Length: 374
Image 1 (cartoon, rainbow, N blue to C red):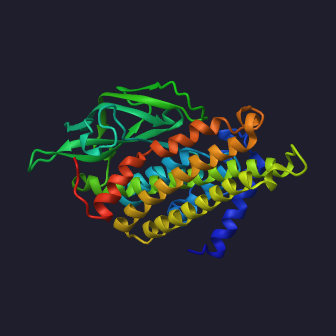
Image 2 (cartoon, rainbow, N blue to C red; image 1 turned 180 degrees about the vertical axis):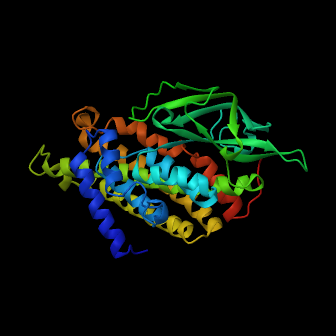
Image 3 (cartoon, one colour; image 1 turned 60 degrees about the horizontal axis):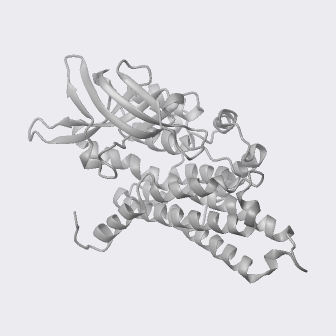
């Protein structure tokens, strides 16, 4: 799939921004610059201050920042998941209240779905919302929620009771950071990123009726309308990280000389780096396919492609980082070269937001038609 002239121009412009900030970037400063240039809201509707493009363009932005060593994790969450869900399913009031700020970077939204006991099974979510005279009361726990401390609100996935069947169904609620009963505690992580991870406790959080996003009876559809962009953006994040690692290794292999020629002349060094590059390019093609399907309104096709893209990109990223560190030898473990920290970060690409095992489950059931074991 060939990128358009506009997409190539966007890629070049964002790459230039990434080079200006580099691996020692300040998250807030880069966020502001990306917002000022219109990159954060490139996927959001133009009528609300966005760029009027799609997830394909937003993925380009994140990939190129990652390739420069300065990825912005909250791009996966705020404009991609939350912005997309509100743009597609929110009321006019919700769109006016949130989309302009998400587009220009002055407002940020986190996304709360993962729970301690639910794992990758969204059907086991126990955070529940019950109706009150004034709206809703939300109670439950969430874990591994990114950037809650810097977000104005969190889009929380809860469950409500179906009046007809009595069964619980997923719904999405906007919960302000300062809401009474909304508590967030940092989770100590080995992974070092500028965005912290949190455990959330929602203790009878009282919300107005208009905190509900979209149709109460179409929660599952609306949820996956946000999860597919999340997978595409995670793939872009992984590809950018892998490209950064390979570029650092290639630069080192061109200069590092132990015997008569640079080590990059030896096939034992050159071929694994070439393989890593090929795998990243293949993952990029799948990511473009997934983004194109989503932007075309093919939610079913996008679901399959987005899961495949996330899987391919995660595997390619882990391999690329591993080979980059191996290329540098002992230097690959030093802070000076900045690759060792990517060993842990790249592993996340196999785990979050959905594990590779669950992706393989999805493909085996949905694509191949094999029976479930659960």
